[in-house]
Structures are given as structure tokens and as C-alpha cells.
Image (cartoon, rainbow, N blue to C red; front, side, top):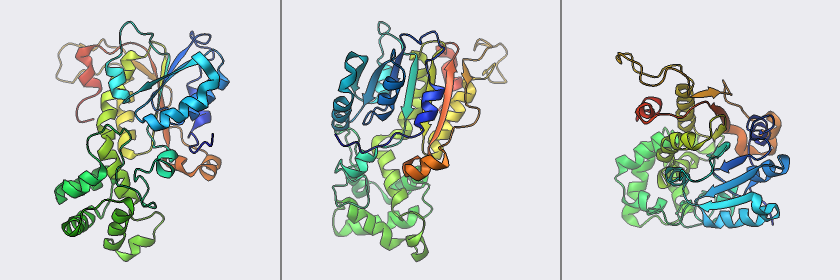
Amino acid sequence: MEIIHKPVLLNQCLEYLSPVGEPYENNGLMIDSTLGEGGHTEAFLKHYKNLRIIGLDADPNIQARAKKRLSVFGERVNFHLGWFNDYFANFSVKEERPDIILFDLGISVFHYERSQRGFSFRKDEPLDMRLNPNTERTAADLVNNLPAKQIADILFLYGEERNSKRISAAIEDARRKSRIESAMDLADIVYRCVPAAYRHGAIHPATKTFQALRIAVNQELKRLPQVLPLAFNVLKCGGKMGVITFHSLEDRIVKNYFRNLGKQCICPPEQPICICGGSPHGQILTRKPLLPTEAEVLENSPSRSAKLRVVRKLRDVAPESAKMIMPEDL
């Protein structure tokens, strides 16, 4: 089987999430929360012969590819189809808790190259962008039905697109004439409406628009703050959780959550008596995010914006402390 996607920060993941020397070294359980084509999972299973892995993915097509790739590992790997936040929210107390949890929040190259769902602005494909085919709204639904201001807000917030208002106005004008149905049509609208100097930069002028729409369609930045506390409480005490981000907003959420886990006390200043327990919930193992080497970026360009942060769990987060560690505005 041809492998399309190359996992990012693989060596750093293998080192910082290693079970070697841990109490669970001989019978550890890992959850790969973003299985994709199974690159990270395959490497962990090869390196650590006593490790078992549960792979999660919301996309049945890419999960089928991972199942085929990982079939040689037999019962050491199991699979779950669905969004990771739903999986951890419904985790049963009767299930074995994992020792290692990994999230890779990047989108697989497979989706750009082979999914035929309009993730790439270079392909004449339906403007879909759903990672899970059961997701209600497509990218075409958003660009054809949302008010121009809401589209501009999505492009600015999720894509950090400085021409967001200009692009949303062009989308509004184009959809008056006919519905925007294909990725190439949208890319052309963006290309034609931005300033000439913006058309010939380091990236295609539609790059940030497509990123923002994909994040909005799949609610990626809504799922992340939901899943981090859920996954952390499922993790065994002493276990490790790693998160790979590619977007500045993603990294800020992870950084602040991990920082709060590592605080001695998280009670607000106006709280007269400590109710959080007065000791850290986690030990941050990466004071600064781990970045790809120059060699990795040259060999695997999607890794260029990747950042890995890792935390070790010291104790569960009590319900009364949860909102102080992951406040709604984090």
C-alpha cells in the first residue's frame, strides 16, 4: 500500500512519550487520538514491543487504510471510529485507562491528495472539507449561506487572513451569480480579489482561506479545549500526554492548559480558601515546544509549523477545579 502521509516530529514523540523506564514499560496502553494513516502508531509499535495502541479517527476512509497498514501487529492495535472528544467524553470507568495519549492536530496529506473532498485549492474537487462524512455542513454550505461578515470573521480568526473582508466580499459577489461548488472555483475567487502583490508571495493566496474553512467545518478549535481535560482525566496518573499543533491558536490553548496543570495553586486571587488541592496536577516535560529539525522540514515540508508539547499527569483534576484549569476564554 502506498503511504501518502509522513508523520511529523516522530523522533521527538518516540523520545518524550517513551514507555521505557516507566512502570508501564512492559504492558503499556497508548491512545493515538488522531490515527490518520497510522504513521505514529506504526513507529511506536515497532520501537516498543510491549506497547498496545488504540487508534482513533473520525474518517472511515483513512481508518481503513490504517487498518490495512497496521494489520501485521494483530491484537496489539485496536481501532475506534469517531471524533476524539466524543470518545474521551464517553470513556467508561470499566475500561483500561491509557498510559500514553498522543494528539497530532494536523491534517493528513492523504486528505489533500486523495480524499477528493476539496481540501486542496489546486484540485477541481467538490468544496466539502469534512473529515467525517456525517458532519452536517460542508465548506460549500458555509461560503454560500453564511453572511459575509461571518465568513470574514472565520477567515480572520481561524486563518489569520489579513484580507478577510476583501475575500468575503468577493465570495458574496460571486455567489449572487452562481453557487460556489468547487475548490478550484473558490481558489480562483480569492486569487482574483486580493492585491496583486499578495498573489505572488511564499504561499498561494487561498491557503489561509482554505485552512480557516476546514477548521470551521470540522469545529477543530471547539473540539480541542473540550478534549484536553477529558483526555487528561482518562490518562493514568504517571502517564504522559503529547499534543502536536500547527496553528497559533491551537498552540496557545495547549500551552495555557499545560501551564495551568503545572501550577501549585490555580484558585483565583479572590478565593479565600484553596479548593484546588494546592499541588500541581501535571509536570510539564517540554518547557518550550519541540520543533522539527531543519532536516525534517526539508524532507517533510508539512512539519515546518509543527510544535509538540508534553505533560506528565500527577493527579486527577477534581470537577470543582476543571474550569479554573481550562476556563472558557482560554
